[in-house]
Length: 346
Image 1 (tube, helix red, strand yellow):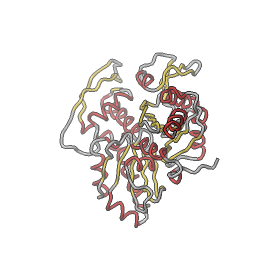
Image 2 (cartoon, helix red, strand yellow):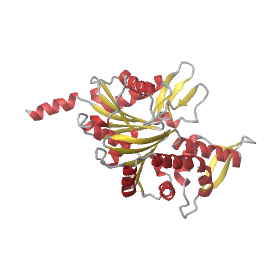
Image 3 (cartoon, one colour):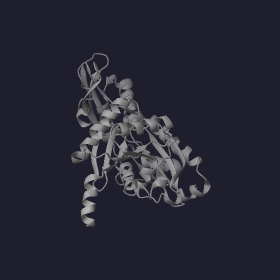
Image 4 (cartoon, rainbow, N blue to C red):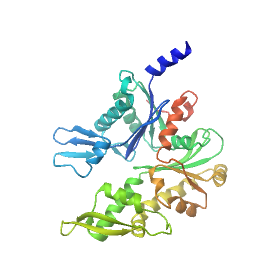
């Protein structure tokens, strides 16, 4: 009897956790795990502002669209920049993971930056409700990341987490199911890509696109000398002649290009540590700092932060998925984890 009831409950209930990021969106379905991982990009027809492609399809068009079509990132710095496009994007992604449960309105938990305003919270909630969510809960990204890493967030001990995404870097000290001190800065992966684009333009008179900059960052980018000097060929358009050309770049040059965004992140970490209560600071000395998010994969960034703070720094095992996995764990028992959810004024 109970088995039959559980089967009906499973068939008709639908609970999902969403990491709505600036560069990519991940969706976790209760009982199934991560079911979707797509870029947060929508391609629109500029004439009538109608969406043509969403996610992976739209990313392929980034920087390659003809006149009249434009690939847009509707999320900026971790928050909604274009309400209607985020709605379209969320609707498409939710439909992909729901499949046969299209007539069932899901219960949704969404991760938001810790520095989010009430207006921004409202925008996220309204977007999810417009996509058919029956209940919407919000959770702070550092809390979700800490849960995803497996840190004891409800314990009276301090744990420090640095979550470097596409649009924001979240630095927080978590204890007793809440954020004690946090520093949310709008400098992260996207700013690193921009720094590479500007450096190559200024020093080599070569214009490259976002996707090329991201590829350079992943392949030869570093924040700290790694001991091995790597090189790669970069193709772009010559700023003077307008003709396509190829140049060779070394990892030391890209380290130089990334110096500004990386130093902003390091000083934000130091600021957060300065504001940490002494008892919790002592815990951080014992436990170290945990890094999550795609930006934490930048080679040598953990070593640089460790050298600058004299603390142990660990990169999570699966840094890109930590936030959505944490939100998924919270979703498994919302009543028990209600303290971890953000309180809203509406």
